[in-house]
Length: 257
Image 1 (cartoon, rainbow, N blue to C red):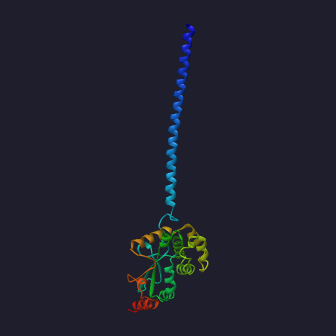
Image 2: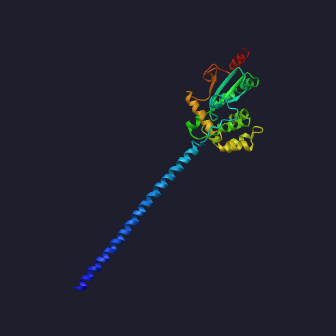
Image 3: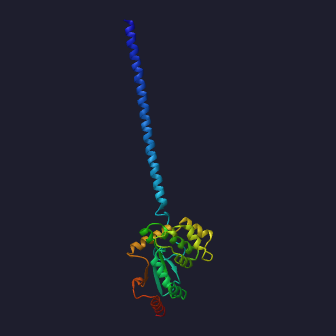
């Protein structure tokens, strides 16, 4: 009889021990689950933080950051790069994309006349740089070239580098201007431009945000394409009768009138 009671007590003791073990195991499991949940939440927060940081650093190929206007930029929000004297009687406003073949065609046809009128003090040109082709065909060549042109403005070499970029413009579907090394190589064609300061400005994308702000202004202006060339508020590029000779006549008349 005693042996039977002892056997039952031993069984109860074993069961009590097993229950304590199970309780301890359940407690450890709950601790692990809670701990894992905390790690997942922290991990998710870390991932979200990294994604947010990366989104802030780069969007569409450009580094996000403060809007840094190039030296001497003028007009509303300092979005215009001026070429020529402030006292000129006529101002030509040009919205252009350095990757745009129509912009190149305008430059080739009008450049000698524009240079002549600017150098004589009769005309000032306000250049606004946009990135229309990047949006239409993809890539970052419009942005990279515009930033490089703004860097050339910082160095006082905008007009010469502007001419070089159009003289070496790739085909519209070729995003060659997206390569900073190519843009720096082309700067060697402009005396005194290829300096460490210019190279750093190009590589750092110093004026990327400024270019994007200029592009937003272009979109907000309701313009339909590049080039948009305004003289006295009228888009002369859309005037089928306009020629370099006619433009020269108009500018000279304004200078004498």
